[in-house]
Every structure is written in C-alpha cells, then in structure tokens.
Image (cartoon, rainbow, N blue to C red; front, side, top):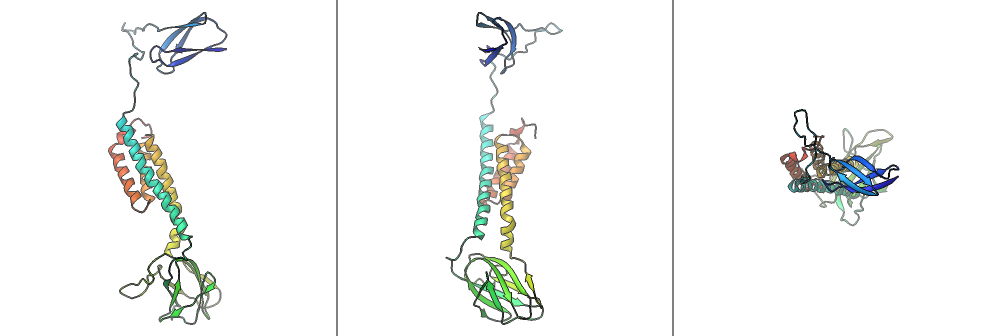
Length: 296
C-alpha cells in the first residue's frame, strides 16, 4: 500500500490517494475540502487530474454542483469576533475577581490578628429573669479579665479574631458560643442606647439553669465564612464556563447564564458585578453573533 498526494484544482487543498496494490489506473475521488468530484489518473507513477463534465438535469439544464474555483471561503466577520472576545473578557474578569474574593474570605477568617490593637467587647450574661454576676469567661479556654458594669454587662479587651467563648455561672449550664471579631474601632457604640453592636462587638449569652453544656448560635460572620466562600467559588466557575461559551460563540442562552452567575460571584463586591452587567447588556445587544449555533 502506498500514498500519493495531489492538489485539488478548485481549492488547492492537498489530498491523498491511497493505492491498494495498483500502479496505474483511473480513480474517482472527492476533495476533502470543497467536495469537488475529481478523476485521478495514475500512469507511470505520474498523476493527472480531470474535472468531470457538468451533468444535466431532467429539463436539460446544466447542474453546477461544483464550488467555483474563485469562490472565497467564508470567514467570520472580525467585528463579530472582536465583540465576542470583549464580552468574554468582561465575564472572565468578573469571575476571576469572584475567585479572589472567595479566597480572601477563607484566608481572612483564619488570619492572625494579634498585631491589631485590642477592642472593647461587651459580653452580656443573663437568664430569663435576671442578670448574672460572679461568672467566669473563657476565650479559647483562657480565662479572661473583665470589668463588670451593670445589667449583666462585662467589658473585655481582646484583639480581632475568631473565638470560642465559654461562660461558667453558678447554678447554670455552661454556655459556649463561637464568634468572629472583625478589625474595627476600639469602642463602637449605638448613639441611641450607648451600647455595642450585637454580633459585632456585643455578644449576648442567655443562660439556662441546671447542669450540662449549651451551645449557642454562632454570629453572622462565621455563618458567612461557612457557606459564602463555597457559593462564590461555584458561581465564579460558572462564570468562567460562560466566558468560554461566549468566546467560542457556542450558545447565547448559556452565555447569559454564565454572565448572570458571574454577577452573583460578587467579585471585589461591586466591581465584578458591574463588569458582568455590562457583559449581559452587550450579549443582549449582539445576540445575533450566536445564530450559527444549534444550541440557541
């Protein structure tokens, strides 16, 4: 078995003629590029190409089934390609910002904040009927010094960070709460009540009488740290997929879905969503770019 190469006279595409033991003869071939029918004659290891005559239909008219030699191959318009790239870059940039935002949340909650100044925290300890005094406060199993004010309010100085706080009070169950103290001003107060902000620098422990352990609900920062980064990562990956779909002009609907999820990724809070909203606008405006796709 041997191979011979020949050039299509219509499109100049190089085709191959596979010889199964033949050294000469005439073979009917079709160009792999323009689908033109060709008659290939091989004689004395020399190839000659003959273009078949045009056939006539039932009405005696010539059927021109061949692609003209001077026919130019279709190329996608450059403006269409450029706009697809611009929209894809907008979606991709927003999604990457989302990944960075999610990673910063993961790192931020586990960082060491000891270099920051101490913050005045308010710990409120009471049961259903009265405020409690003479208690023990543990931060990460370390007993803390405090200053008692009034109405079950204890003031503690501690740097920002994540804490597992346990309150031990006589005749009551031990109460444990996990919370995160973000970097902030030392003594944030509400102007109306002159109290700290609940969940920010003020944490309330409702004690139960009896023996045993009670685990109280964690604060909003830790709720964010537990589920928000994972959602941001998921939305960002959906956005990256949407950017690829847009760049390849595969599907208008899928491009919209990807751009929408890149908005939800909240990259750099507002910068990423703004870029994605711009991408959605231009997707709607130039949706005809996707007309060649069967997935629309």
